[in-house]
Structures are given as structure tokens and as C-alpha cells.
Length: 210
Ligand code: HEC
Image (cartoon, rainbow, N blue to C red; front, top):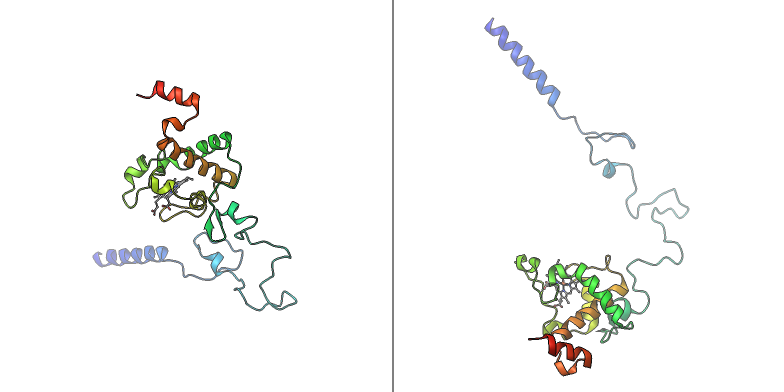
């Protein structure tokens, strides 16, 4: 009786084990749905780069790009305008007309894309900066960064710098220069001599500043 029970139990255990044993991996046919096989795109029938192929007249599997194709990382147009660097040097002035409208536009973009780290005033005071223990986003209004030619600030936006990522995909060309103009304006707003201001602004400043 006791023996019989044991035998039944071990049979049951073996049956359970069988039902939970992993399926032996096998190459599914292309197109065969197998929810457990996460590798099927890797293991499907396919050509490797440079392999010969009878599919094309030249016997090679790799195709030439159509005539006139431009690689998406090719610098087109004026590199000073698109990359901020021309003839091996950062451009020394903003290559688009700087208007009050452009600077105001740059302010909006700066506050969206840069202020979270560099602070609304560009002085490096932000919640992110306080919590970035590895390397803080620097103040953009201190003399070190303000001495950068505009092309260098532009290049930082396009390529990133050290721990800072590139904002090339998010910020199109004109917006980048608008931000550069605003960063320069922020610097000026820090270090402006009172009598260098236009007359009406000077009068207002004398009245309102303590
Ligand atoms: C997520 C945080 C973050 C954002 C957003 C950010 N930065 Fe930075 N930035 C940094 C950090 C961190 C550094 C310092 C990187 C290092 O030294 O490795 C830095 C460095 C810089 C520098 C100094 C580069 C140098 O040569 O010393 C400039 C200029 C700059 N950022 C401009 C910008 C501008 C303009 C924007 C907006 C388009 C921006 N950053 C957005 C974090 C950020």
C-alpha cells in the first residue's frame, strides 16, 4: 500500500517534470510564429555583408547606393554655419543676422533645452546641477564660457561636450544660433556697465536697481 503510494507519487513527479521541461531549441522555418523564440530575426535565412549572391548580375549581395545619394552625416553647405567650425577654427561671430526677435526666440529655446541643467539665468544653478555629482553643468555666464567664440557654443549644442549629450536632432540650425545669441546676451546682462546701456534702459535701471 505504502509502496504503491510512493510509486504513484514518483510517477506524478516525473509527469510534472516532463511537462515543464524546456522545449529543445530548433530553428523555426522563416515566418513560423514561435512566441518563445526571441532570436528568430537573427537566426532566419539571410545574407551576411560581402557574401556572393546569384540574385544580382554582379554576383554580390551588397548594392551600390543610387547615383547622387548623400550620406546623412556629410557636412553640406557652409561648415561655419552648419557646424560652427570653418578652416579649423570656431567661427568668431554668429553667421545669421542677430535681431531682438532672434534673441527672444533663443530665450524660449534656451529655457526649454538648456535651463534644466544650466539654470534659467545660465549661471549653473539648477536642481539638476545640484544633483549631478559627477560633473556639474557649468555656469554659461562666467568669463571662461563667455570668452568662447560663438562657434564653440554652437558646436557644443551640435556635438555635445563630455558628459553633455548632443542636441543636434532636437534643435535645428537657426534655433541653435538663436540659443548662442541668447547665451551671449545672458553674459552681457551680467557684466554690463550702467553707462553702456541705451539711455531709456539706463534711466529705468537707475530707478529700479537698489
Ligand atoms: C542634461 C543636462 C544638460 C543640458 C540639458 C545641457 N547641458 Fe550643457 N553641459 C552639461 C554638462 C554636465 C556640462 C559639462 C560637461 C563636461 O564637462 O563633461 C555641460 C557643458 C556645457 C558647455 C561648456 C562646454 C565647454 O567647452 O566647457 C556649454 C557651452 C554648454 N554646456 C551649453 C549648453 C547649451 C547651449 C544647452 C542647451 C542647448 C545645454 N548646454 C544643455 C549639461 C547639460
